[in-house]
Length: 133
Image (tube, rainbow, N blue to C red):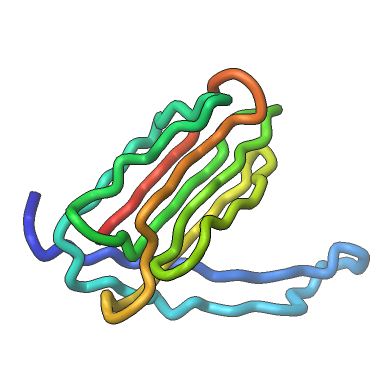
Protein backbone atom coordinates (compact mmCIF):
# COMPACT_ATOMS: atom_id res chain seq x y z
CA UNK A 1 0.00 0.00 0.00
CA UNK A 2 1.45 3.41 -0.96
CA UNK A 3 2.27 5.94 1.70
CA UNK A 4 1.09 8.61 2.21
CA UNK A 5 -2.50 7.98 1.21
CA UNK A 6 -4.84 10.87 0.43
CA UNK A 7 -8.41 10.39 1.71
CA UNK A 8 -10.93 12.80 0.14
CA UNK A 9 -14.54 13.37 1.30
CA UNK A 10 -16.57 14.55 -1.69
CA UNK A 11 -20.17 15.38 -0.71
CA UNK A 12 -22.99 17.86 -1.16
CA UNK A 13 -25.84 18.11 1.34
CA UNK A 14 -29.10 19.51 -0.02
CA UNK A 15 -32.78 19.69 0.88
CA UNK A 16 -35.70 20.21 -1.50
CA UNK A 17 -39.29 21.31 -0.88
CA UNK A 18 -41.33 18.45 -2.33
CA UNK A 19 -44.67 20.12 -1.52
CA UNK A 20 -44.32 22.49 -4.47
CA UNK A 21 -43.83 21.83 -8.16
CA UNK A 22 -41.20 22.08 -9.42
CA UNK A 23 -39.46 21.19 -6.15
CA UNK A 24 -37.03 24.01 -5.30
CA UNK A 25 -33.79 23.41 -3.43
CA UNK A 26 -34.19 25.24 -0.12
CA UNK A 27 -30.78 24.39 1.33
CA UNK A 28 -27.53 23.23 -0.21
CA UNK A 29 -24.03 22.94 1.19
CA UNK A 30 -20.91 21.70 -0.57
CA UNK A 31 -18.53 20.18 1.96
CA UNK A 32 -15.62 21.52 -0.13
CA UNK A 33 -13.78 18.22 -0.31
CA UNK A 34 -11.96 17.98 3.03
CA UNK A 35 -8.82 15.92 2.58
CA UNK A 36 -6.70 13.90 4.99
CA UNK A 37 -3.59 14.19 2.83
CA UNK A 38 -1.10 12.36 5.05
CA UNK A 39 -2.87 9.11 5.96
CA UNK A 40 -0.47 6.17 6.02
CA UNK A 41 -2.81 3.17 6.18
CA UNK A 42 -6.46 2.18 5.95
CA UNK A 43 -8.88 -0.70 6.48
CA UNK A 44 -11.82 -1.19 4.10
CA UNK A 45 -14.43 -3.95 3.91
CA UNK A 46 -17.52 -3.49 1.74
CA UNK A 47 -19.04 -6.71 3.17
CA UNK A 48 -18.18 -6.41 6.88
CA UNK A 49 -20.34 -8.76 8.96
CA UNK A 50 -21.79 -7.19 12.12
CA UNK A 51 -23.36 -9.66 14.54
CA UNK A 52 -25.68 -9.24 17.52
CA UNK A 53 -22.82 -9.90 19.97
CA UNK A 54 -20.79 -6.97 18.62
CA UNK A 55 -18.13 -7.02 15.90
CA UNK A 56 -14.95 -5.02 16.41
CA UNK A 57 -13.68 -3.22 13.31
CA UNK A 58 -9.90 -3.71 12.96
CA UNK A 59 -8.51 -0.17 12.95
CA UNK A 60 -5.34 0.40 10.91
CA UNK A 61 -1.95 1.32 12.31
CA UNK A 62 -0.90 1.74 15.90
CA UNK A 63 -2.80 4.84 16.93
CA UNK A 64 -6.12 6.60 16.50
CA UNK A 65 -8.00 6.66 13.21
CA UNK A 66 -8.98 10.04 11.77
CA UNK A 67 -11.45 8.90 9.12
CA UNK A 68 -14.34 6.51 9.70
CA UNK A 69 -17.29 5.43 7.57
CA UNK A 70 -20.02 2.88 8.29
CA UNK A 71 -23.14 2.09 6.25
CA UNK A 72 -25.93 -0.25 7.35
CA UNK A 73 -26.67 -2.33 4.24
CA UNK A 74 -29.38 -4.47 5.82
CA UNK A 75 -32.96 -3.94 4.61
CA UNK A 76 -34.68 -4.52 7.98
CA UNK A 77 -32.26 -4.59 10.94
CA UNK A 78 -30.92 -1.65 12.93
CA UNK A 79 -27.19 -1.31 13.63
CA UNK A 80 -25.60 0.20 16.74
CA UNK A 81 -22.29 1.99 16.12
CA UNK A 82 -20.06 2.33 19.20
CA UNK A 83 -16.81 4.27 19.14
CA UNK A 84 -14.36 5.78 21.58
CA UNK A 85 -13.03 9.21 20.68
CA UNK A 86 -9.56 10.16 21.93
CA UNK A 87 -9.90 11.47 25.47
CA UNK A 88 -13.62 10.67 25.75
CA UNK A 89 -15.96 7.96 26.96
CA UNK A 90 -17.63 5.53 24.58
CA UNK A 91 -20.39 6.93 22.38
CA UNK A 92 -23.15 5.02 20.61
CA UNK A 93 -26.02 5.61 18.26
CA UNK A 94 -28.46 3.45 16.35
CA UNK A 95 -28.60 3.46 12.55
CA UNK A 96 -31.70 2.30 10.70
CA UNK A 97 -31.28 0.30 7.47
CA UNK A 98 -29.46 2.44 4.91
CA UNK A 99 -28.08 4.78 7.61
CA UNK A 100 -24.56 6.20 7.33
CA UNK A 101 -22.01 7.28 10.00
CA UNK A 102 -19.07 9.47 8.95
CA UNK A 103 -16.19 10.77 11.07
CA UNK A 104 -13.67 12.91 9.19
CA UNK A 105 -10.71 14.93 10.50
CA UNK A 106 -8.67 16.69 7.78
CA UNK A 107 -5.51 16.61 9.93
CA UNK A 108 -4.01 14.32 12.53
CA UNK A 109 -3.40 17.27 14.85
CA UNK A 110 -6.14 16.36 17.33
CA UNK A 111 -9.12 14.08 17.77
CA UNK A 112 -9.51 10.67 16.25
CA UNK A 113 -11.03 7.49 17.60
CA UNK A 114 -9.42 4.38 19.07
CA UNK A 115 -12.26 1.84 18.94
CA UNK A 116 -15.13 1.06 16.57
CA UNK A 117 -17.67 -1.71 17.22
CA UNK A 118 -20.77 -2.57 15.20
CA UNK A 119 -23.67 -4.47 16.76
CA UNK A 120 -26.66 -5.79 14.80
CA UNK A 121 -30.04 -5.63 16.55
CA UNK A 122 -30.54 -9.28 15.55
CA UNK A 123 -28.52 -11.95 13.77
CA UNK A 124 -25.68 -10.96 11.45
CA UNK A 125 -25.98 -8.18 8.90
CA UNK A 126 -23.94 -6.71 6.03
CA UNK A 127 -22.28 -3.34 6.48
CA UNK A 128 -19.64 -1.27 4.70
CA UNK A 129 -16.70 0.04 6.75
CA UNK A 130 -13.67 2.23 6.09
CA UNK A 131 -11.12 3.59 8.57
CA UNK A 132 -7.87 5.48 7.91
CA UNK A 133 -5.04 7.02 9.88
